[in-house]
Image (cartoon, rainbow, N blue to C red; front, top):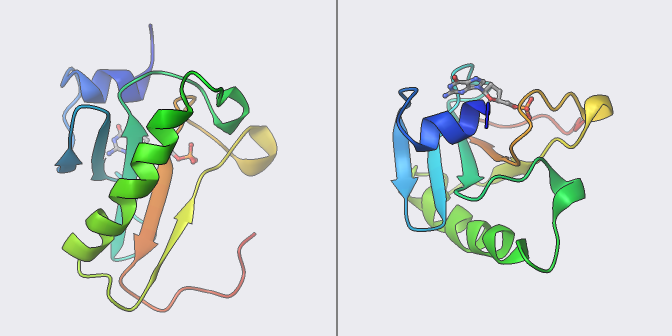
Amino acid sequence: MDCLFCKIIERAIPSSKVYEDEMCYAFRDINPQAPVHVLVIPKLHFASMDEVTADNSKYVAHIFECIPKIAAAEGLSGGYRVISNCGDDACQSVKHIHFHILGGRQLSEEMA
Ligand code: DGP
């Protein structure tokens, strides 16, 4: 599987790890758009929100359990934003579902 984020999980490509457990991996975005910009990915490969099923949704649920813990560990007591880009119109560039955690400054009211 020629997937950038699978290679990051396998350590074939280095990354700055923030959190890891048996179901997910979190690391710093290479092109941060806020003082804190963390990506959270499932250790199971599926491309996007469009591929969430009854078989893999437990990975998404687990990631949403982890996100508040990661945000707290990153010091985001003032709040944060979670984004998952899905498909070309949303400019999804890596076809392994991922959730951006953005924070550390006042974010724009604009979301798109
Ligand atoms: P998206 O546009 O939602 O598909 O976001 C993909 C993000 O992945 C983008 O913000 C940049 C980040 N990214 C791409 N390649 C790498 C990489 O090799 N390492 C890290 N840490 N982040 C990457």
